[in-house]
Image: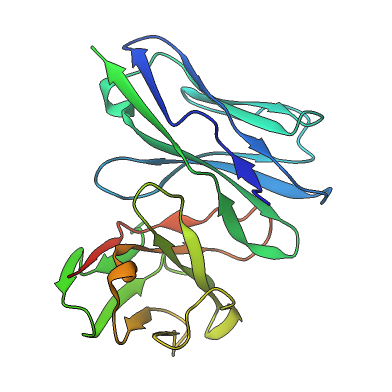
Length: 114
Length: 115
């Protein structure tokens, strides 16, 4: 079964606007971590933001924020004030206790228009 | 602080040839990972090392892939012989430990094309 689901294969956003990327996850583990990575066309995976399952507040990191809804098992990434350099593939990933690897979703391609 | 280093960045080989990739993790990071990313998909873990020991190699095709981290620092991933379906980006990552909160930091990847 898919542990991470990203239902939006591609999105367009106007420069300076906000965009929300959807991510739902599947786990029965009470302790887990959720991560978002950005992968530009150069290929490197760049860590953006982390949310722990026990964190009471939504994580924020500069223009990135995570809308964490534990009961719905969703961890959507919000990018505010989009810039042309935000055009990339974005991956949601999860790590569970006792399972060392990151399980990645299929990714969402974001294209920022001037 | 220097990031994860990988070489080469690109490699083109014929099927049945062999190829090796090198990775140097962030200094002090005990855990090292090799991922395979096929075009249009998320990365898939091939092997994980904790220091110089293998933690998880359950998804490594051991008939053709091998990896080592002899001194607990840098690592080499080898494919021998390569198949067409091995065409992918091979990503190396490292983290301070292997806990749920330990962020994995990735290198630039090696793009392999098998003809």
